[in-house]
Amino acid sequence: MDDMKTAVYLAKFIAEKSGKAYFVGGYVRDRLMKRENKDIDIEVHGVSADVLEEILDSLGKRMEVGESFGIYKIKGCGLDIALPRKERLCGKGHRDFDVIVDPFIGTKNAALRRDFTINAIMENILTGEIVDHFGGANDIENKTIRHVSGKTFPEDPLRVLRAAQFAARFEFKIADETLLICRSIDLSTLSKERIEAELMKALLKAEKPSLFFEALRKMNQLSICFPEVERLIGVPQNSRYHMEGDVWNHTMMVLDEAAKYRSRSEYPYGFMMTALVHDFGKIICTEEKNGVYHAYEHETKGLPIVREFLRRITGEKKLIRYVLNMTQLHMKPNVLANVGASVKSTNKMFDSAASPLDLIYIAQADDKGRIALEKSADTEAFLFERLEIFNEIMARPYITGNDLISAGLVPDDNFKDILSYAHKLRLAGIEKTSALKQVLSYAKNLF
Image (tube, rainbow, N blue to C red; front, top):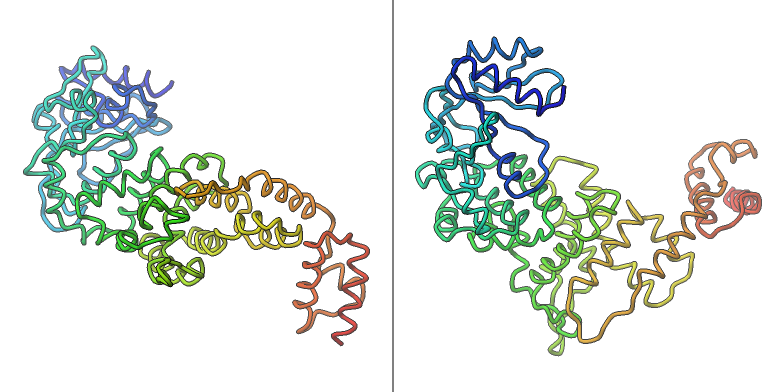
């Protein structure tokens, strides 16, 4: 049985017990916006926890989420089923709430705990009736993010980031009164896991991720979570190549260009993170000479700033390695393409990249995310032609450590150096038999 049929069966059983079951939250919002959402949340009103548990047991194996939260699942089913609850702040953190489950508080009081009006809409599963106590449907129509309650909204600092994330994903404006509240909320208690979760949604789901950061800038809320991004504001650039203005403007443009390549990239999250941090080095490298701004070696000198940012945001080592690698290399593809560099040079570049494909895309986004006096050359065709050559060469037979041992070499202190030389010959496209002769000669000279 699919999730929707299970939801209807559940609602019918609850109705037989004089209760009502509603679709709630993002599922209803996205249905009204005609957007796909497979995460179905259900809220059950008018029956006790014991009665609901008995109904759920008749449908399958019941599982409870957390303790005393009134949230249930059925094994093998994607539904999240909850009883109405009230939350009372009891600390400073995102999770510091006392939860009071009350199936009889009514739909308005239940919806009052929601963050935004667009997330506070309910839909009766059996009748399709929309229950909208706070004007969420009207805010969807007007493309507005608006808080439900001025009293409870500030209790959860994560809502500041959620407001920015929704504004970016849906391309909605944030209501002035909501912006005003967001400016007053302290984000310092948020964990990096919660910050990263909202950042990831903005980077991976928004067509214009720049709107996430623009919203936080309007709220004056960049400094706690994203201080390095805030430092890009006002950093000047060479107007000949960057008529769009400062590094902030350029980075926002690159983010939106990168989103166009995102679905084609091999590591979308790392790719979008690279687009965000690729010019952090300009914060410390930018200087003026004879009235012209330069940021020489910003792609390497900025790596410590990028590393600090990433370690504060995430614990994912693969992501950190990828982003540092791609940031360091992001200038190379267009530089090599513009001078018509040799196959050997492009092979070496691709070989050093965490993802050669993504490196081309980040270079394209970097180039398109600016306004220049002169139109830059189209480097994409050149780079993909060279990538095809690189992939073909790397698919050929090549010298391995076992090949060298079979040829009589003994693994010792020089072995790593010999393998490195063999790899250089591979990148140069030297056929394996010929390369082996050269490697053995090289090894002989070493000894």
